Image (tube, rainbow, N blue to C red; front, top):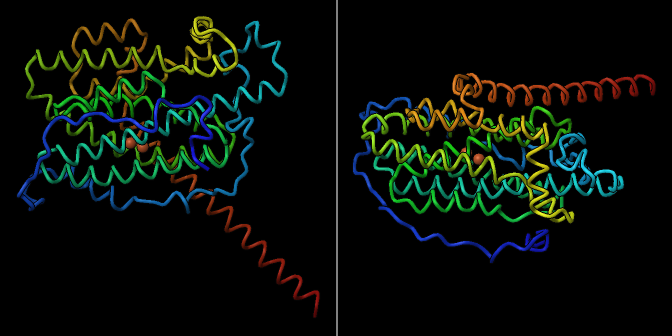
Length: 372
Ligand SMILES: [Fe+2]
Ligand SMILES: [Fe+2]
C-alpha cells in the first residue's frame, strides 16, 4: 500500500528537493595503509563485518498491538492529568498511544532517510578515500534502518506522520551548508545524538519484543556512526580559528533549542482537537516529558565537549537548559553498552530457540518410545 494512504496528515508534496552545494571530490591515493589513520580503517572494517539484514535478524512474526505498540504507561502521555484525559474513553487512549508511536517512529524513519542522504553526501565531499569508504558503509547502514522503521510502521502500526517541520529545517540547514564538516555536525552529532538517546529510552523501557529488537540492533550500528563523527571533527576542529569554532557553536546551540522546544509531538495533540498553544503547555508541564527532554541530550552534550566545541557561550546555553552536567558522562561506556545489549539480545534469542529445539527432539524421542 502506498505510504501516502497511511499518512495521518498529508506531507507537503511527494518529496523534497534541497539544492546541492559544495564540491564532489576525488582522491588518487589508494594506498590506505599509508595514511596513518588506522582507527578510521578499523572502523571501516567493522562497518563491513557488522552488516546484518533486518529481514532476517528481526523476528517480524511477533505480533504488535497497534493501539499500544510500545507498552507506553499513561503518565508518559502528555494529556495525562489534564482536563482532556478524563474525557477519553479506553478506545481513545489506545488511539492516542497509536498516534504517538506513529509520530515517534515516523520521525525516526525520516531521520534515517536524512542520515542516509548525509552519509552519501560525505562519500561525495570528504577529501580522503578512507573517509569515503567508511561513509559508504554508513550509507548502507542507514538504508537498512530506514527500511526497518518503514516496515514497522507499514505492517505493524498502519499509520505514519509526515516529517516534523523543525526537523526538516535542521536537515535542510545541514545539507545546504557547503562546509564539509556541517553534515557531520548537524547529522552525526545533533540529529543522530538526539535520535540515539530517544531510541535508548524506548529500548530500555518497552516491554514489547519487536520494537525492542529493532531499537537494540539499530543502536548497535549507530555506535560506529558516532565514533566516526567524533574522529573526523576532533581532528578538524583543532585547526579552526576561534571565530570559526564560535560559528559551529552557534549552530549547535540553535539546533539544540530547536530540538528541545519543537520536537514534542504537538501535531498529535492537535489531531485530538487540542489547540496548539494548549498542547505546548501540556508538554512543557508534564514531569515525565521534562525528564525525557533532559535525557534527550545525554548523547549530544558529551560528544560536543569531546570534539572541542566547549566555549563559554555553549556552556552557558547548556547550563540554562539544565544539561551541562551531562557533558561528564562517558560516551565510550554508553556505546559499548549499546553493543553489549544487542549481542545479549541475540544470545538470549538463540538460547530460547535452542531450548525449543531440544524440547522438540525430546518429545519426538518420547513419542517414538511410546509407539514401540
Ligand atoms: Fe541510523
Ligand atoms: Fe546513523
